[in-house]
Length: 407
Ligand code: MN
Image (cartoon, rainbow, N blue to C red; front, side, top):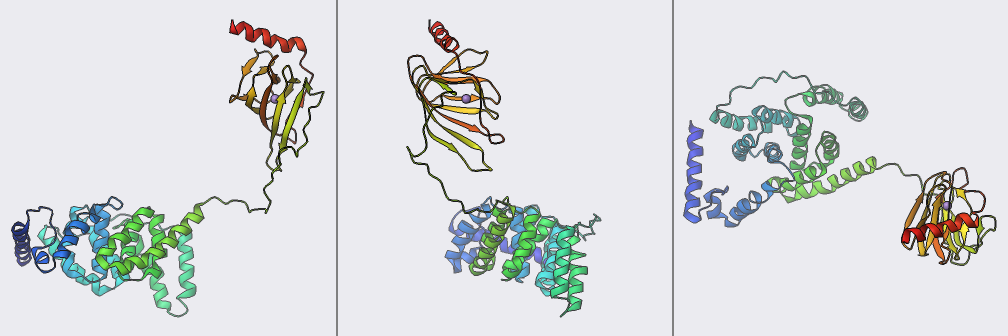
């Protein structure tokens, strides 16, 4: 009763203050703050509650878990009731608040936890929340590999000096507390992270930040925890957490990046214009054909090609490519034909894809030269299988076809 009266008196005071100065319904700072430290009133209402609490990078429920954790961890009991009310309004369940306090008893000490209980009890009474029972849900299963590594670390670094502390860590902290279903693994890690930042012990943060992120906390949310805590535990502690989180993010990113093979130290290779041999082999082409910048990359890559300039009337022999070929038409007018299909006329900017093992030829038209850049992949070292020359009558049938099409 006394508490309700006190809180009513406080809210009446706050309301009266608000009415006296400016009619703001969203004011959180009590009137006394505006009277004594008007700047603090401004930062409280315009920045902390007007901006930070509204940022979508962290849900209001998470902000409440983080805030209550910071208050419990730092023993700021005076602010606990207000933020526990806010936490309940933001969807934190009474049992979760109790479990947050239980978790933080281990991370920030029993006295802080017990003092928090006294304050939370006032809010629970005020809201008619009765005694809480155990949820009865199954204990959480921890990742066996991660647990084995953690246990081994405790057994080698803690047990030789403080065997009972090592035993309690393994048996009680991780064997019981961390497995309690009353708080989800993500939220348990979140409140632990918040408490470590709040008490200025970022050296313990990587383990818990990684654990939180393994349980679903995003990088954005983790960064926002530090941002939010700047207001509840001060800028220095928030700032100290930043480089620690940065290293956690960087290591996680490196470990998820796919393994890339080592750099062999090979140099870039430039074949200068005119340096490479240029030729047209009589048995592969009919008419005047000039090949420039032929290239073949080093294994295991298998792409190769070159620029081929056909004089008017010139063309390749019939041939196939085991993995197909792409032709980029550079200039002039050209013809491409798949055996049994009509001739296709192509011009500058056109790209032709010739599927694997399709018998075909390509060249200039009867009266116009054509240049294309050809690219093909080799299979077992070979990119082309040459066959017989394209006879004049077959080639010139293309001219009749395309003229007929034009008419
Ligand atoms: Mn070809």
